[in-house]
Length: 317
Image 1 (tube, rainbow, N blue to C red):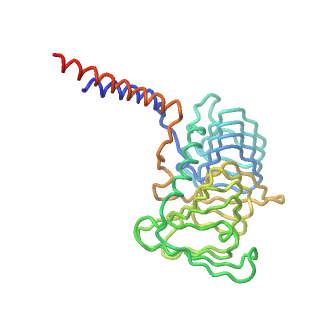
Image 2: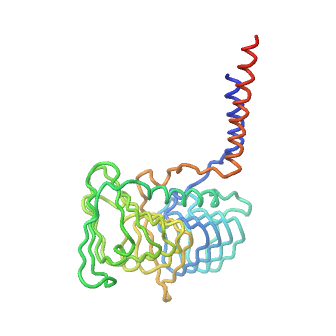
C-alpha cells in the first residue's frame, strides 16, 4: 500500500510545479503588474513594476531602508529627474537623465518578483476575498440626487478579528465622507463591487490606524483616488489607476499606474504604511488547469490499478 501511495504522490508532484521563493505584493507600498508612467509625486516606501517604468520627477523610497532594494522594474526603466533611495533592480534597459543611477544594480541581476505568477495569485486572491461572508452592515445616509457626492457611509468594525463588509462602487463613489469605527485587535475587509471607482471627500478612522483596513476592488477596471486621504490599503489587480490628486496611506496594488502632477490627470502620493493583517499573503485555493486534472486522474488511476493487482495477487496466493 505504501508503494501505491508513493506512486500517486509522485504523479501528483509532477502535476504541481514547484514555485521559487520570491517577493510578493505584500512587500511593497506600490505594486504595479504592468506599466507605470508618472510625472511628479512619490512613493515613500518600496515600488515594484512588472512592465516598463517611465518616471519624471518621481521619487521612490524616501522613508525606506537605504540598504534595501526599493525599486524593482521587470521591463525598461526611463527616468528624468527624481530619485530612488537605496538599490534598484531593472530587468530591461536603463535610460536616466538628471538621476542618480548609483543604486541601480548591474544588468542581469535577478528580478526578485515573478510578476506573472504573482499577478495570477492576486487576481485569484481578490476574487477569493470577495467570497468572505459579511460580518456587519454599512450604514449610509445620502442627501441630494445620486451622483452629487452627497452620501456618508459608516463601517462599524469594532469586534476583535476580521470584520467584513460589502459595498457597491456606485454608493462608495457617491460618498463625501467615509467613517470606519475600529476596535482593539480588529481588521477590516471592504469588498467593493463595480468596475469604475473614484473616491473623493473625507475619510476618518476612529479608534485604530490605517494598517487595519483593506479595500478589495475585485471588479474594478479603473480606479482613481481624487481629493481624498485614503486611510487604508487597496487591492485592485485588474484596475488601471489614474492619479487624481489624493493621498494613499497604505499599500496600492493595481494592474497599471498613470498620473501627472503637473498635467491634467493629477498625481497621487503614497505614504509608507502597510496593511498589518495576513490577507495579502494568502494563497487562494488553486483551480487546476485541464492538463493538471488529467495528470492527477492518471495518477489516481495508476494507484487504483496497482491496488487491484495487489488484491488479486493476495486472493490467488
